[in-house]
Image: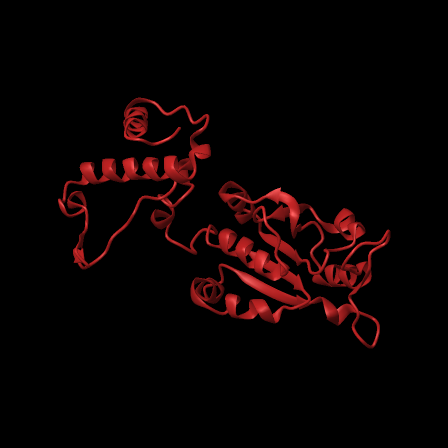
Length: 243
């Protein structure tokens, strides 16, 4: 996957691309990236990239000229182009999986009051919001999006590590434990050290359902759970959970 990120402050993102799993993915050739400084495409001596909003209002808006020049220089006709903005479609795991199938993504980071609508109309295929809140930095939002997407590119992370993560099958992840077996007078659940694989699988599924009922019951709406899973749900509700 090729990632092309356009930003007024690309330095914010450099460490992200040069660290941890991302750095290994780049080294193995699974992911490549370019960071473009939009200011390099400003035409005045002060590298001005923002101006007042037509019609009035607080704040400044990113100018279309430098943005257009930067996007054209990215040289990716037909590539899916994402603008991260609070006013976009809400991002989720399914959306991340969809984007992970793209061979190339162009990501535009906004600042201030955002970007001129004409840039969105001409270049942007996806306006994406990472949540119902506002950030001052489009770079932070872009890193969230990139991190959710690139880890789903085949080969970046082992498939079995992804199979039971939160939002897989619409459920949150079960609690996990490591050594020591007793820490601060708190024991690892007996079932996890029992060696009984079937019981461990059942316990983990029950805990996934329990956590989803507690924190995200909306994820269970319309799932049509049957058989043993339905029985687990009813049992948990009887113990005080909420559907």
